[in-house]
Image 1 (cartoon, rainbow, N blue to C red):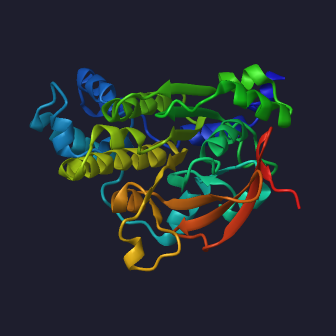
Image 2 (cartoon, rainbow, N blue to C red; image 1 turned 135 degrees about the horizontal axis):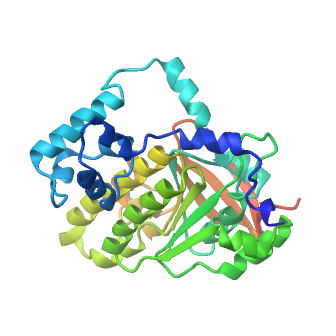
Length: 342
């Protein structure tokens, strides 16, 4: 029964995920010292693509790596990855076939999302309290472990980064019952960590990258609930706003790189705030998501949730590079997020 939560029969697809990236150990065969590779891993750089995604300045800040060593590492990485060559849109289209989507538990919501929460991308869901952001996060912890009917997605493990103390493992039990899954197996496939400061939240990403590297192709979803809570606490007032936004930009850049590097879906929740300038522009809703333009540009898909009647909620595409502006109604049930009853 434990095999229900994580189907191991689809080994071929997992093998495809494993070959998605090149291990940083490959650099040793091209003249890079093993000790230097270990230093890179300690800094959360575990793949050749990870080296490409890291600036020279940041690598020089790693203790024990000189400019000469960094230049050599960058040179070898460029050769292994084929340099800075361009690819055709056709080749890119083939590469995009590796992208998968994690079901939300609601058919209506999946349709709105174009099939589910997309991998190699950041999906941001924002709304007021009690709109279902955390309920959707809990449901995704379970649905991410389920293979799809087409057989193109095998299911996998989940990492949940909690910044607001909202994670409830017992909630996963009732959702697991809905999908006829073994409760202990479902809970065992979710790795949980609590972040206490924005710095701690940043440091956790290095451990996340290491975990994805240790079990390639096994982890499918990274959840952060919520993305901005600790940044709002640690940086207060307009005097620290520039520092906060710069730090947030670095965090989101790292998050996007991890999603692309390891082909995982990233689901983040966000809070809303009153917009003091809304009255001047005659906006219908004077509230807006926090994080400013930095978060707006970093998120691939943004979805706004609002309350409906009773247990129903309404989701609306706020911004997306490929999805049309549309709405979907869903319900919060004992078994998690599901379709609303007529």
